[in-house]
Image (cartoon, rainbow, N blue to C red):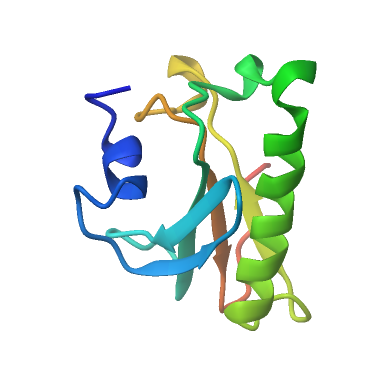
Length: 114
C-alpha cells in the first residue's frame, strides 16, 4: 500500500531503529515509547487489521508471533515479562491501518484492564 507509513518503514523509505526482522515480519523501536521497552512488530505483507488475518496468510501470523518472541529475548524482557497490545479498528484505538503489535516492557506495567 503506497501511503502506509509502516509499509514505507519496511521498504526503507522512512528510517527506523530496526530491532528484528524475519521472512515476513519487521520490528522497530516506537518513536513515542510508553515504557522503557516499546517495540512495534508488523507483518511485511500489508494486512490492515487483526480481522484481516485468514487461512491464506496464516504463515504471516506465525512469523509475527515468532518476531514478538525474538524481540522479547533481544530486549531481555522475555523472563521478567512483557505486554503485547493489538489495537483493532477505530473503537479499539487503531491509528495506523497496518496490523501491528506493541511489545511493552522493561518495568512492572500497571493493570489498565480494570
